Amino acid sequence: MKTKITKKKIKEFILNSNNFLITAHKNPDLDAISSLSFMVNFLLFNKKQVFWKMISPINPKFKDIIADIKKYKYSNQKIDVVVYLDCTSKERTGLTFTDNSLTVNIDHHPSNSFFCNFNYVKPTRSSTSEILYDLFCPDKTISDNIKLKKYILLGIIGDTGFLKYENTTSHTFKIVSEITKDVSIFDIYKKYYQVMTIEHYKYFSYLIKKLTYAGNGLYYIALTYNELLNCKLSYDDISELFALFRDIKGARILLFFREYEPRNVRINLRGNDDIDLNKIANRFGGGGHEKAAAVTLQGSLNTIIKKVLNIVGESL
Ligand SMILES: [Mn+2]
Image (cartoon, rainbow, N blue to C red; front, side):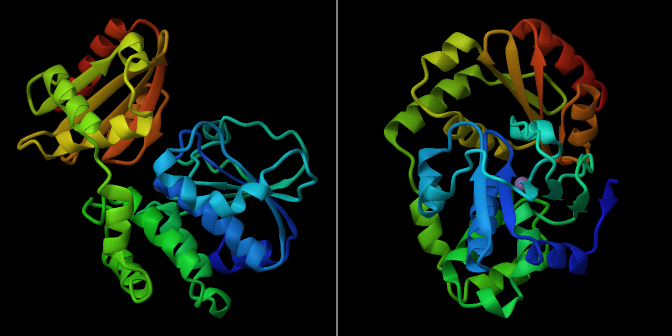
């Protein structure tokens, strides 16, 4: 039976179980990577048997976050509990597990489909990392573990655009305030954010040329399969450059179309207004948050652009 679970119960359930597989969504962002690393390290710390698996390349910039858990990669070991982090559905992992394990879903996306045996979903929290802090960090056993706190901070920073998006709440700052007693936020900024190369800036100027204004505060960029093939930057690096356009004065919605495989188009929707992008993405079979959502569509890039611009335009 699929059920919601209380904070106390989920904590008890996890601490009373022994063999875990931890996973997060494919194309993992900083929140997915950090929450996974936190969970694996936390369970190891509690003397549990734990493995993890995550599909698709991890941004080289963030590889150090999982460096010390490499030896715990999953390869069909016996598992009692699968924990899905930062995933709206099982499909978001890009993985299929066919055994009879119990499943736990810890997430903050409002579009979460409550797909596990136990579902702990808190859309008011900035990130899955923030939820993991609420669940496990006030615990004395890890209060001294600076590495684990750093992962929580990284996940929060990732999903809040460095503590500036609307999902950044006083609760978020309370946690950040606790963690920054031990972890330097400037060190994190230097290490993970002051990493732009000339190649990045050159590509940003290319994106500026590609940026199209569709009226009513709607901007978009579309990159074909060949354009992406010829680009030396990673998928995540391009995403970060795209995020900079969010600061254009008067920009209400930004759409980013990427044909990552021929006739497969990933669309990122970003917003600054009270327009619910999660609802718009739902209409195409995608989802996410009110101000940041995504969807993947099959077909010709130009047809997809027209179709999406029409539907998004209705909301403006
Ligand atoms: Mn997240």
